[in-house]
Length: 476
Image 1 (cartoon, rainbow, N blue to C red):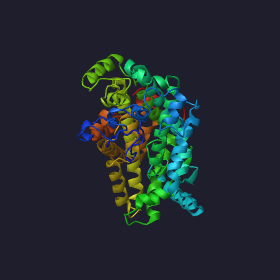
Image 2 (image 1 turned 135 degrees about the vertical axis):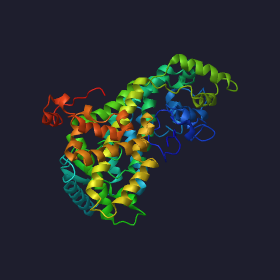
Image 3 (image 1 turned 90 degrees about the vertical axis):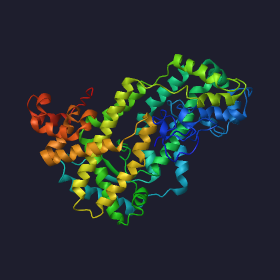
Image 4 (image 1 turned 180 degrees about the horizontal axis):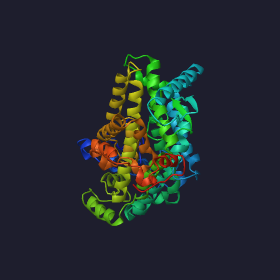
């Protein structure tokens, strides 16, 4: 499912600066997959193929950096953005790039769509009130166009992606071999701005692709919209229901139930959004490349490269990038952060599946077909899977989601919805990754003793009160 494309098709991935593909079997037989300038996509984790591929038509004696940039196809029209100083990602470029890609099919939302979304979210909240102890997290319903989705979610993406991009740039700069640094000599003074433009272009493509698919503000597993806002994207709601032979209002209500369920968690489990973000940033802090390993890999790669690494030949840099020697090594700390993120996302999605099924199964005639469509979407790589697979090398495996759904369903059946939802009152009460290996054993243990006693000193109600207080952010 995970692919890496730098400057090529964005049909199945969001971010072009993600980690290398964790599953080599899923690459094509040649080991390459859509890279630019002859660089295999899966072996160019930092996106340098786009940069050096653009240099191929310029040559090493191109003169000063400004002249060089003017001759690069990728950056010819972006020189005015080279003054960006707002961080490692040029978000002005990302926004402009995403909106320009969406413009041909842009459909502004109508007053009728706004009213229909508001009504669907209100009805969804009424149904959810009967199946969960968590109160509504929505104080207003919004219908967004695809362009609205890009513009309104940019603040959340900025906070999430900037730390990752910063670490990638730092790792790339510190680990670049001397021979490669010589190749980048003409750009030495503006590498920071170049990185911002490169990442901005990649993120712009990513946001445009996601905006074509997302149906709500929580489709990627994180709360991306303003607090208190329940959001549907009517154009994509229609696309989601295409071919299902279900009324549009039924499809809208199903997706409204999912959005409203997500919003309840994110509104009333205040530590949740922070821990999700922290897990991504914890992974980012560990991004590094071992210079000694790079040098060993460089020596091996150069020995197998026809003509070696020739500073006068930009194509030799492309071959170096394609050799995989710049791929970061994953640390145990990063693996722990990934497991934590995977588990949290699975628990969120599993809880949403469980409560939506309970609320809609007897009320929504097309619930089974709609739920199956959602499952197929996940299996083929929906927005959440694509985002995190490429962003941090994480796949939301269906097994984890099934096990998480089993936990929540069995908790409600054996202990009631109140006990099920009280597991969200403190992060230490939630199932761990190991618990999801045997979900029914975890549920059985909840009936053997009061799981809240150790955390609350015997006062179960105090743990619920903590959910509305400060973020405990324990180390799981």
